[in-house]
Length: 110
Length: 116
Image (cartoon, rainbow over all chains, first blue to last red; front, side, top):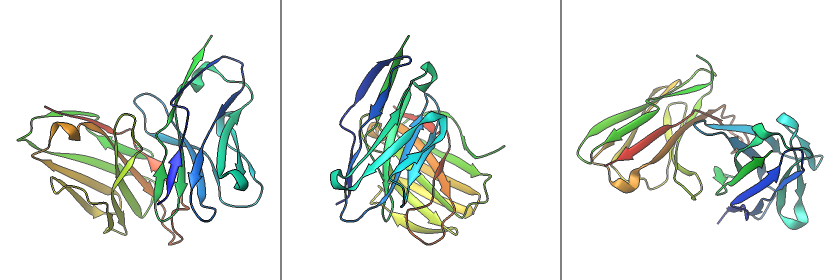
């Protein structure tokens, strides 16, 4: 069965520091890969997606993600975090349907 | 209105009540979805409609009943719910081009449901 793992339940970073959120998936082939962000009281907003081609994908709000086939990973990164980035981040795999991870909650401290 | 809207944003109901959640998408999409979001659990896909026909029902209890009268509107009818049904219910839409789960889903803000 397909599964998506986000091993970090909660991450705290200082404003201006770099960020990496981990995502691993279990699927036989390369699925479609997505990162979504959810701010309090809001729905999910797409940050970026990977279908094929260049394994480094650029998204909105200065985020990027790198697909590593050998590690079945699709980690999200940002070089310098802003206080407004505090939110819940979800990795998702698109196969026959979307499968979401449990999310990583990001706290940004001044 | 733009994007995907959901009403009400908050709902408190007793176990014997009947209520409905409403979702409307203004994106011209042809597929709509209901998800359940519970704390510390992955989003659970409940129902999928494509071209107004239900194509997915992930073994959801019958106390949840979806309705899709047209491609822009989606309802979730609720009756005799249990306290464990308390969650955030998210609606989403996408343009289903028949290629599988490659199309970005656009989400509404959700309805926070509390069952007493």
